[in-house]
Image 1 (cartoon, rainbow, N blue to C red):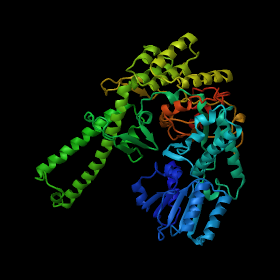
Image 2 (image 1 turned 180 degrees about the vertical axis):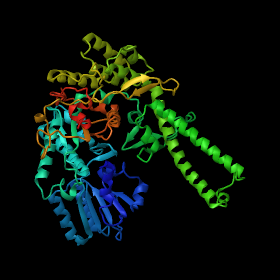
Image 3 (image 1 turned 120 degrees about the horizontal axis):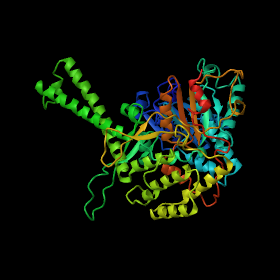
Length: 628
């Protein structure tokens, strides 16, 4: 079952063509990565509005609502019923609505004499956001409520932690209801991932016990899915790897997320960044912001989003050259036929076949030109950041730090170089150095590094948190090993860097990611009887065959880990791996979360207190993908 199919729950369960779609911010975030405005229009949606916006009555048109069942939203729906805004109402709730709130809607409909107009009420169980066929996040709105900082702040109360875990579990439960499968749960012990596993396990079992209303039996589940081929659900905790979220990356999608404004598959850019400055004394021209959607319909994006940036830049140039060659060929043919400079009216006078061929090429050329323009602009913006901040130098140095390779340059030299990166880049590099080191630097060396960082304009507060985190994980258990393990692991997932691309960008190193390194996942090598699982009707002597795995990171994830999972899955024919995380952040957003607040003294969750890194393919549990 592909995650993109969730959108069909909204639109095709209605039994009529919907003309008005009403959503809240949560519903908007779920729909926007899946469906464009044109696709909504093709499905019959001619108008889509926010629930809490000022909406005029359209009494002869049916409307579908796609909202969270919050008190505020329920009150607004009741107000719409009283105001008789629409002909009929199809109420789709993103997660399950409680009986009391359902009674509130019934009372409002009864008072407004609109009971017959409330045509359908659905619990859609879609409380998660699908970004790719094989990637999902839990939320974008109010993500700070389940963020890494929210889980790990030192003054967190038990009730707050329970609420955070319940929110995460509710979304994960929705994910598996949509997937139509009961997972086999695996996780390390002693951290937030274990809390999620316990609560999810309980929620799944309670639903399975209720045979009449179970969401995983009968018509609610695809035939044969509730069998021995159930997905493996691997839960990991962000605290077991703090280096990867800080890492400067080198792949197209991850670079865009790191250096540009990219969220929910849309990148926002300022136009005219390289335009001439305004005359002296004149008011500076306001820069327009332009958005680009990077979706599954973009073939270039689908092919190259995980490629090293030099390859992407070369491919953009090749696409541009091909387009220009085709355009020149069409001009040449028009010239031969005596149509050079003529308009479309003259072309229509040609034979039907010739006219159709010419029109088809023109339509195709317009689409190709738009995509080439999109990726030329985006790649140029990324390249500007690489050159101005020397991101290739940071990427190469961090790869060597994380793989314990020989360093050809002093860390102090990079920190002290005024032309090498921003203060944030320097801070990220030093934090990776501190995290991946077997032993922390001596006090005298640390003072020297601190002085260099301060001179470079860095904020040292993230370092204070990382020092406490590393000391805490060292007390609790062996910290994550980033080197000398056969496959050179780096954090949760690993890639190896090398040189040798044929595409050379002036002033930028040619760093190419090799594909021969296995994925590294930090989860506990626990015995079967210590793992959380849902092995219903499966004998203890029977080894399960796993064809699908879902890896989920509690505390937030990133595109670096996602891309490594994609590459891993490609090497396993017939197997599928899905990546999920509680929130998606880039390095700048993550650094803000690890800045200690005034009351913070130490991380409240101790990281991998009972987990050890495994450097085999996704650990023995996930390695079942390749076993029979």
